[in-house]
Structures are given as structure tokens and as C-alpha cells.
Length: 311
Image (cartoon, rainbow, N blue to C red; front, side, top):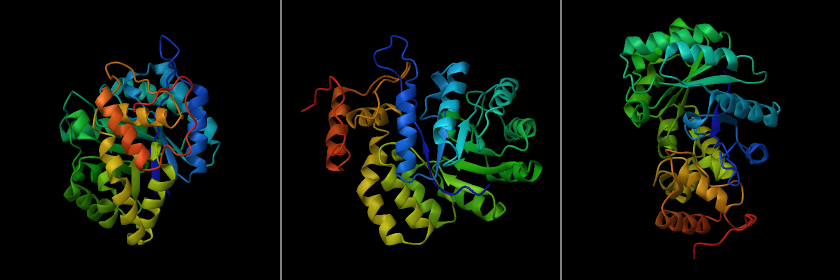
């Protein structure tokens, strides 16, 4: 896998005027084009930020088709494919493997089951063998899944399946990222899964970031990551100082509700999220609008139809 740099874990826009909150295809295509025009290095469709957990199977596959088609080969597109039943995961992966133009599959730890390291090893190995030679990127996000994928298990997987070629590491532990860097082959790609740890992760050898904040500020976040990767730490740190508040703000309430609120303020998409997620409180929305304004994200945004400011 040659992909490095900054990838956006892109949101899935929903229609505000539709009772079922169906996927807003035109808004999703527009977001993809804006992301690419802004210089993002790759896109991740239907991950956690894409609310994959609330999409039914047809919607999930449709959203991935939209992103791949809209990207049109200009940047790689990774597709999220996660399940806590290995048998279901393999069935869904078989569907995904038919999507022409998809660059890789991103799959998170099985959630809720709390599998052992051996259970995770067998789960991910089964996925890799089922979709080979399509590249597989592991996604370690114990804060959401209650299961940590330890570096020794990642190494076993990399040795057992040549198409397991990357990991999105969102444990929040720099020591774990360091252990991955030191133990894995040099061509195995390691991406920070936390915007606020990205520079630290790159500093110890990671290859980039899969970002939430790049939804709102793709040009700025991708520039920050590319600057760090070419050792222009002055630029990278300046950008982190400026946008670090946004990295935190996106988790003031459950992701991606804050991101969608900001994107709505920018006129990019609706702020609709699906239950059990709900929109941020009015107080949080006011804070988000103030911050977005201070960062200049609203300067050139079109005014959404019917939008009433919070101030």
C-alpha cells in the first residue's frame, strides 16, 4: 500500500426534508469533490464518522458506491466494513469486493463481544483471506469497541496475510503507536486515528492521519499532515495550534454530531444525525458556531436555505 498523508473519514449526509433521513447523494458527491479539490490525500467512506452503524446494508453499499464514483480515481477510497459477527463481516466484505475502484477495506475491532487477541487474530485473518488481494487496513478503536488490538497481534496478522497492509490506530496511546512503528515492516502503514495526536504519532514514525476535522477544514488539516511528513514542523505546529480547538470541539458531543453542525453552518450539508445520535444542545451549537467563525470556516460559506443564526 502506497497511501500516506491525510485521509478524511467523510460524513454521510442525510436529507433534512425526508422523514426517513435518506442519504443525500448530491451533498455527498459535493463533499467528495470539495475534499479532493482541497488537497486531501484519500477518503474513508462509511466509518464511524460516516455513521455506518446506523446505515442498513443497502444504504452502506450505496454510500460507498457514491464516494468511489464521485472520486473517480482522483484519490484512493477506503471503505469501512465492520461487524461483531465474523460470518456477517465476510458476507458484507464479499459485497464490498465487487465495488470497482475501491482501494482498501477498513475494519474495526469486533465491538461488544470483547474478543481475546486470538479471537481478533482469527477474525481479521478470515476477512483478509476472504477479500485477498484487496488491501485491508485494521482499525483499532478500543474506546468504541471495548477491545484493544495489541501490537503483537498486528504483527502476527501482517505476517499471516500479505494484504493486511495498514492500521488506523485510535487507542490514544503513543507508546502503542511507537511499538507498532518499531515492530512492523517499514512498508506497513500506520495512521493516527486521533486528530490531536497526529503530529506526535508522525514524530515517532506514523505515516499520516485519518481525520475527523478534515471534513470541515480539508485544506488546512491535509497541509498540517504533509508539512509534518516532510519535516516542516514549524508549519505543522502552527496549524495544529490554530485548529487544535476544532479537533477537541468535534468531540464536545458524540461524533459526528458536532461535525455535521459545523458543516451545516458552512452550507455544505444538513446537520441531521440518526438515532441513537442526536443533534448537539443549543449551548454546544452556539459554541461551535463561535469557534467556526473565529477559525474563518464560515467566511465563504453559502447560507443554508431557511438558516437562522444562533446569535
